[in-house]
Image 1 (tube, rainbow, N blue to C red):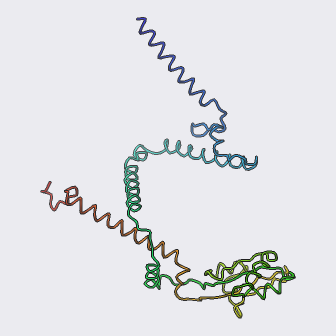
Image 2: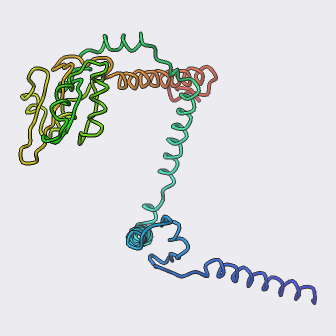
Image 3: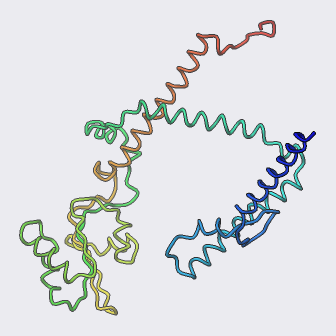
Amino acid sequence: MTKRIAIAILAVLMLCSCNLLSSLVHDDQVVAKAGGQRLYLSELRKYIPEGSSPEDSAALAMQFINSWAMEHLFEKTAESRLSKDEKNMDKELESYRRSLLRYRYEQRYINDRLDTLITQAQLEEYHQSHKEALELPRPVLKVRFIDIMSDSPNYVEIMAKLSSEGGQELKDLDSLAHVSALRYFDNSSVWTDAAVLAREFGTDYVTMLSHLKDNMIVFEYSDRGETRAAWVSAIIRSGQAPLEYCESSIRDNILSERKRDLLNNLEQDLLTNALEKKDFVIYKNEQNN
């Protein structure tokens, strides 16, 4: 009897200790309650980056609290309002599990087998065989752009050197633009979308190209005392995009095609192997087992 009493007392003490430990773990300031759940200050602090200003900390805290509350309020409401069948998610969870397993295996299969090497010849072959798919939606240009105050002491020299083909003149232009220009970039060796360049002039590309004369685009803003100009070393107004302009997308397309081929082969191999091993059987009539 004494032994049983001792065991009972020990069990009670262990239970009390567990409850005490639980209370100590959550011996923390409660900052919000929602849906029968409590949000503690220590948990909230994890989502506030160190060094945040008081204003940013307060905004981030309210954002997290509202999101946390909405999650638990939705859960509580759904639990009370939905029927037993509606809350039964076994089929959906199993379907999601199968989809996730398939996706993860496909990714491993692709990663183990995908050939990511793309040669220049393959790029050129794709470029030649997909002309219609690689039509330019807008003109592309190779340009050198500058934004400069019209009264700059280096204005005349910079504008004269903007069309430099190279050598010392181009070096001088780079040096002058570095100290005098509001903005300057040299894209004379790469293609630029006309719409992207037009944003530098604060207009649309059709209006911008209407100012193109003798390989120069010049916009003068007298109200600001500012001039924006671009020397156009090359322009393609329509037709197929040049290879160097669409090379990145061609690489992506080639890799996507290789991935699709790998997945198609995987599916076919799975079906073939399963049929050979009788792991996949199609019954022709109801008499077969």
